[in-house]
Image (tube, rainbow, N blue to C red; front, side, top):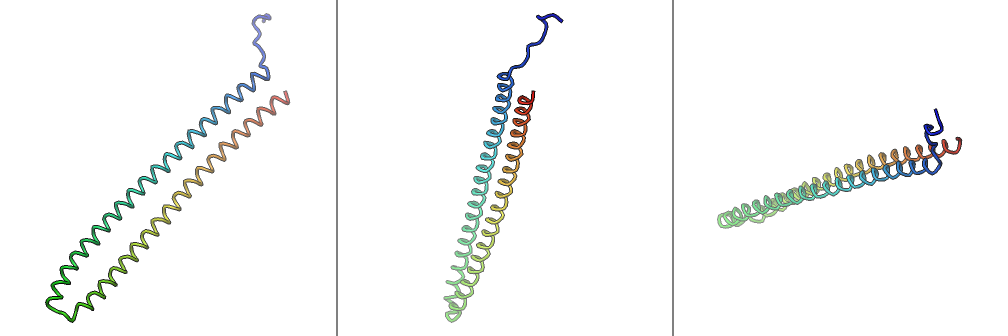
Length: 150
């Protein structure tokens, strides 16, 4: 080979420019992942909020319907059996209390499930970030070590 055909040697600046470019690409990937995770959290938050709102609306509608039915029955019974009204009101109150307790229990269970789900997503996201960061640091250290020991 002649002097004109020999490939040029890489300088430290060239190697560092390549390392910088690779680190920039990895940083962009991490930012894209962060953006995707934020988007998924927002989507889940909106979706769960909509579901909770729909459930609340259904429960309100059902409670209103029950209240209307029971109100009509109370009026009829009040006309027929004056002595039974107090007993009936006590039973209704107990029924609504049980219904409120069930609603509270189900709402608490849903909140716990949401908390666990969000925790799992955050944990998985953190684990992936730490792996990416570790790979980036190992690559950087390997590259710098190669450059220094050359």
